[in-house]
Length: 375
Ligand SMILES: Cc1cc2nc3c(=O)[nH]c(=O)nc-3n(C[C@H](O)[C@H](O)[C@H](O)COP(=O)(O)O)c2cc1C
Image 1: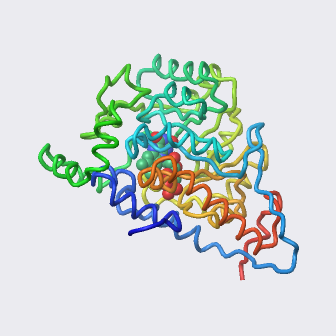
Image 2: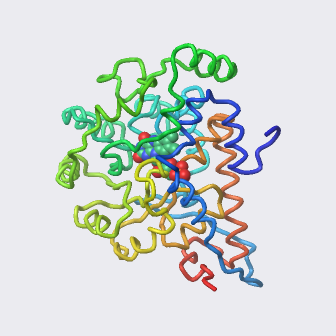
């Protein structure tokens, strides 16, 4: 694809052309046959909205409140691991774009830039926590989030073990192949590989050192993440973290009820972008029953397959209070850095306005189940 990106899908093509093959495969791929990855996109796209007319939609307000703050729109940048490698010091660039657009960003535990580096840019992100086996180190991560003044802690619970991603396995090659792949992407090599060093996992440097275990990241996760985590460990996090706590990776109404019972402030309906249990329900299909189970007691966020502002409106109509982007912002970051993320957010904003105008909504509160056309 040459020229200007008209939508997020164009950014995917630009990202593919700019990233070394193994990094694009890591970003783009899902587990096993990628059934859930596809379902996320297709099920969301198949939600038909009710076209309404003649309802004065000249003024549209996208602003929304979540976790005690007003945001420009009900959209945030979800945690995407290694995103600092898609563009030079990528998470810092993304945090700047999110702040300028008035939306939140959630920084992954496995980001390239550390929380401290991102916060030093003047934009303190929300923080996403994975449980590594060393519990003392997890306590340290929580303490650092507190120290930096993060406004929310997202505990990701759908990665007890890493899902098998065939595209990652196929993309891992020897040094020679890696060298060819890098040589084929000179602009990335210069921007990120040379000027973007260190290539590390900033938050995990105390346990992995200054070199990201890129050769076999899945194996590293398998060896270091803690598969024994239960709701008791969430309680343990709760004791140390008094701010907003969000459980990310809920797909089942019973688990949603547990999240409510365990004192979380919100949950994210998510299947990790189809990267974990392949064949699991899409987020769009799982969302309504979870909203019903939660019954308005805590905030319900959702992600998975969102590629446009129209998709955001569909997620809201299915019951979400707020929507997280995953690949959508990461493709844009890979393609054009901060400017790409800023542009992707502008596109989402504009697409939301059109979808709202043509469904007769002028503010976010008006978007509900009644917008879905089930004929
Ligand atoms: C490359 C990649 C890395 C991800 N890394 C994380 C992560 O570190 N922590 C996390 O909670 N979720 C992670 N996710 C899941 C996203 O937060 C989100 O749930 C998912 O991307 C949504 O699906 P979508 O990309 O199709 O919109 C990752 C997703 C991708 C694509």
